[in-house]
Image (cartoon, rainbow, N blue to C red; front, side):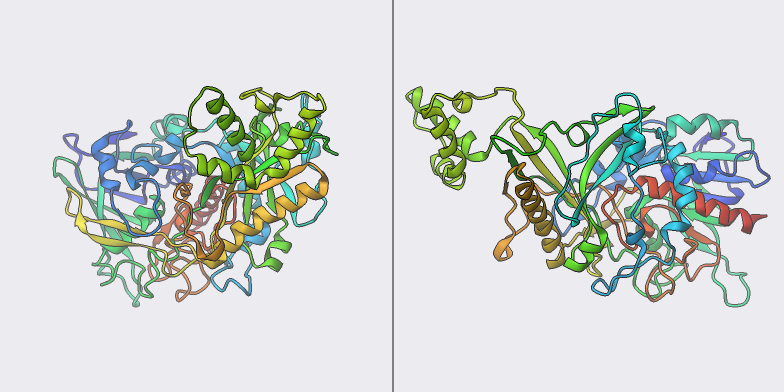
Length: 542
């Protein structure tokens, strides 16, 4: 049943299980209780469609590295940010769950094997064609799959990682009927949670949530009580609600150790971080559909990226990364500058940005000299023609895992929203370890392509001599780590069951609980963790 909070007759509510947030995690969790004896209330701030007034509630101040505006990177209505999700899916690596000596903040209190069964269920929920990922042979055996050949990499430092692409599944649209048909589930729309309320009658010194208070745009207040509570509102709103719940604790619910909002992480993305130009007579095929395209087969969409061998990454002291190869018809920056300069001089014009063009040509002089030599001996000289359409190489995008940092964080600012709740400040920070990850990833790729005689790679990302991160670098809107999972309360906000350490009946679902991020997109893991949490809560609510 879907009900609007401001509808006449809607007053204070109660349920066995109260879930705040109707995105991928919240809807997955609620759906697991459909048609059971457990009463479920799913509380959603937005409605069924995007509303700019609701989006405004996400606005905040960005104090650290620049990124997309906060109200753009997330969606506040039924289905959450799956409403603009690109659909890229891959599980975390088994090694992502392990502790590293050089990263003291690393290590999950669960193992990848604890999620394997849930990853298979999650693959069905996000409508993937198959739960296989790195079984390239499976995909090659499918009709049309024989063309998907992996690069024969000359080093064990790199490997090919396979991703699948969800249709993408819009959870609000895809699973709305399930919510409406389940007699034991109510979805409360247009209810903006202000804070969590403590159970003052809790015995034995245990802290418990008694309920929450929410408001509608019209100012109507609704109190919700329940037995078990789950925050499933993403990596930004989770710390916001916890820190705003000062009746639970003076510094915010679950914040006894000043960890709520800490260790904020995203996946930094640098487009065109390097450029690969194929050799004139490459020793390996340059038709790379596995990397250049998203291939549809066996009811699935598959593509490959280059990722590190986890053991070699640890040895090198770097995090995970993926290199996405995008086919390019431009041979190099130097050749592109030469073409443009030639065209403008031929037209009697003084070239714009001449100094930049000269620098590009000097950097790629070996490529240019090779083309001039071939032209002098009457070989095809399309090097002066722009836009031949022929794939001459690849532009390389870099997306990587950042090392968790205590001072990369989400806090409450001084500004308030229209309900008087303090907006968030986001101080996203990267460190020297992240510079090493970025530069190592590109160096390994350049060396591998050279050893294969595939071509020459020019790294355009320059982080030498403490140069700043490029202005066009952005996050991936993968907000993680602000309520991290750990075995003990002095290391994290939630335990291995995703329960807030200091609160007996409060859980957190979503990427806020990730201690580390790996390099894979988080949605598949968010869904898998929600499925695991559902099994745990079924035991508590039995």
